[in-house]
Length: 285
Image (cartoon, rainbow, N blue to C red; front, side, top):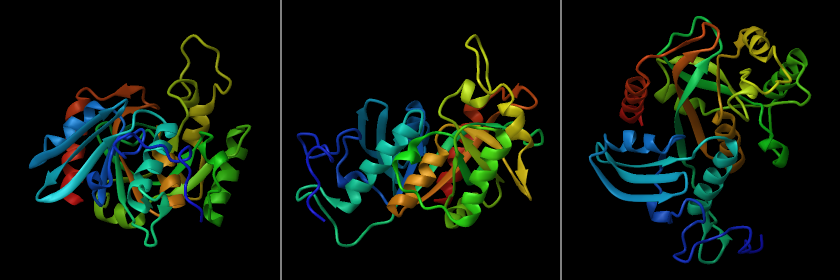
């Protein structure tokens, strides 16, 4: 493969990747990813020490040690567009020689764990519970620009969800890391997560602007194929799972359930729930 061009892989003057502003030495084998930049500090407060910090746009990074193990925590902001930037530059840091712009002969596999917040799609999922995403269903269009391989089960689910919800496009469906799920999410609610390209209409919310799919929430709540049910809404997980598959990394999404969309109830102490989930994940990485 020819060298990667300067316009395909943008670097800063110090040789760091363009958006994350990081160098290869800042990347640990295990990456904790969060959406909210302020949540980086909620993670790093548990570190033995913080060795490095970088603030660039919504991408805030802390590198430190937890129980003696090097951990990198990075915020992505909201949406799968940012997840694509995050994953592409993260992969470049470990699998591309940034000086020669050539692919490294041996590929490195990273473990990326998203700690996020989510709204439940099923009545029996309690507020304040922890849900680990087995499959992710992407309602965003990111994978229209990539050649994502889906197995027969995933492709069948994608076609069936489109048919039964009446959406004018086919979603993509991708499973996360089963190894990470067994290690980190073994005692959590196991669910299948819907990733939306927005917070309001794409998740069935209506304020003043008219929405095109007024029954979307109900359709997703009722949808099932055998024992496959959709359990929660958020805005990033499918992007994580798809990019991880495309680039040969492992990814897992764990979710603090802060709202139940069917019961119309929200948790009263969200920060405490998120903090408890962070501590649980760190103990298991």
